[in-house]
Structures are given as structure tokens and as C-alpha cells.
Length: 72
Image 1 (tube, one colour):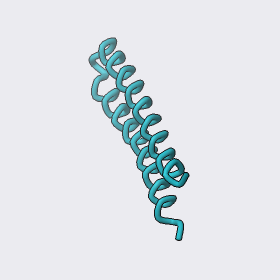
Image 2: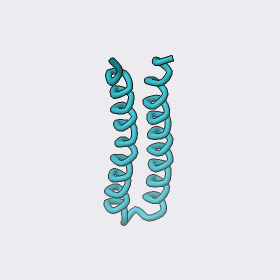
Image 3: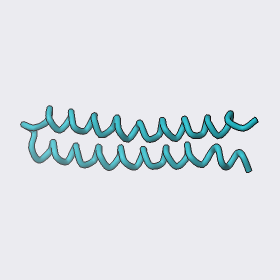
Image 4: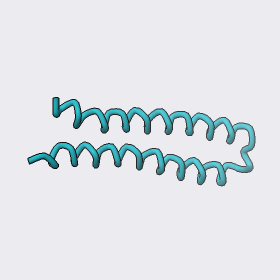
């Protein structure tokens, strides 16, 4: 049962971050296709959004580690 409690946060965080980054990338590429002159601004905002999405998966990892090693 502990294995499920440890694996669930990292799995859900990874799935959520993957979906968010995929949706963000598709929208960024579509926006660049429509307006190539704004590519640098779109890229900067896309990278910032990707960093925030990746942070969610890191938080999931931290929670999993805390659950794994927090019990004595």
C-alpha cells in the first residue's frame, strides 16, 4: 500500500506536466506559424510556461520522497 502512496504523486505530476507541455508547445508552434515576427516573444513565454509545468513534476517527486522516507 505504501508503494501506491509513493508512486501516485510522481505519476500524476508527470502525466500532468507532460500534458501541459504538449498543449503549450502545440499552441506556441501554431502561434509562431500565424505570426512569425513575434517568435522571440512567443518562445520566451513558452519556455517560462514549460518551466512552471516542469516544476509541478518536481514537486510530485519531492512529495514522493517525503512519503517514502518520512515514515519510521
